[in-house]
Image (cartoon, rainbow, N blue to C red; front, top):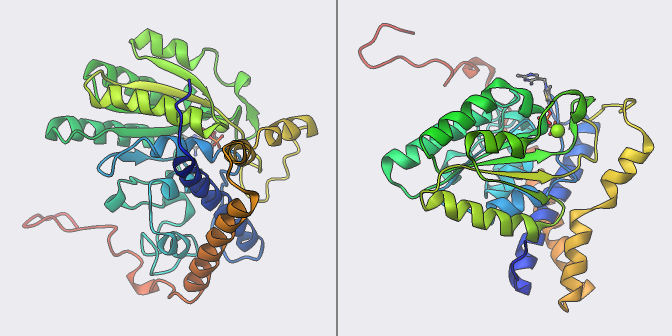
Length: 327
Ligand SMILES: Cc1ncc(C[n+]2csc(CCOP(=O)(O)OP(=O)(O)O)c2C)c(N)n1
Ligand SMILES: [Mg+2]
């Protein structure tokens, strides 16, 4: 499935993919230098999935993410400085430095949050889709999830409710074939598309390295969901270039698998298409350099940011209900 994007549209998608790739490469180095507190899960290799899907969304739509959520946040349009400040644990961060990489959220742009619980974003997106439906907002919610969530009961429950209530919800599976250190075939006995059939939910598989193919499929499915046709499943076959987490020695993975992962680089797929459309290499490099400069500025600003005040660590964790007795 393909729709013709013009040069400008494809350049814009390419720019966001470069933003995600370079941001994560920068984060990898910052992590190596001890500047990132906590764990870091990078999405290098699957940039085309969030970019293709979020390009098909409107401003009022919402997305729920996973533990590998940097691409979802950036593609949904969170502020880059707030993003780096958050991951570096600064008060100026999107969640005032309290969430870090695995809990980046910004409700102002419909980014409901990265999530440390496998499958945890699914019911959040389901609830958001229900809110869109009840409020007649015309909005759609997207639940990003990995293949690791296929065997979680919560996916099956969400498929059921979404189908039953005809919710405007896109189930966006990022199938990279790995769940931590185990291959998919050791974890899930069925096929996601077949699971969709069981619930009467249309399901499509797409090459997750081709941003145009992802966008075309997402466009059609999101338009159907928005139009009242109920939930849709988009399974994107994609790759995880890095380890499960930064620092993972990947002893469980052989060289052939890594080479396979790198063989379909979404950035190369799209830059080759751009060049075939007549965009010069120089124009592409200029765009990349501008993105890199934005990232360096965001890192520099984050480094100058304030560490959260320890005394206020519990602020926003508990709240007192008006007139209630619960602390
Ligand atoms: C409910 C739950 N079970 C187990 C874990 C531990 N865990 C963290 S990430 C992960 C693998 C997730 O794989 P997948 O969903 O395919 O995402 P990927 O890392 O491949 O992007 C697991 C099992 C968890 N965080 N939550
Ligand atoms: Mg996976």
